[in-house]
Image (tube, rainbow, N blue to C red; front, top):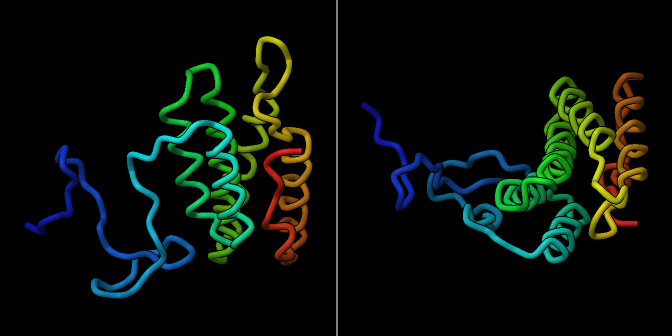
Length: 160
């Protein structure tokens, strides 16, 4: 039986280094810095960090930051954070040359962003829901037409 990397709680974790697109590299390789599995940041810092990573072309890492907020944040905001994480994974699939995976995740992100309705109808933390939906739909249209999104298209603005 193959021995798997495990964290302190015994959960399986892949300790191999990863490239800038989040793909595992051979053991001993130099990869990009990993996002800690137990990352907990306030929402404003989460968005700032995720935006920085998106701007650097590190959508996989941005996804990990947003996923931590999704899993650790208040229940009422989970759909919003999940949508943001899925948007980043959709971009990751584009970067990896997987348009089918990108379409699936971007479609999920649009649906969750569209379906997210906070009590007071205000999206928290200045998140630009309308702009993100427009950006994701533009990416979907480009992919459907067989086009290649520009670098700028792969760096959406999380806040207005």
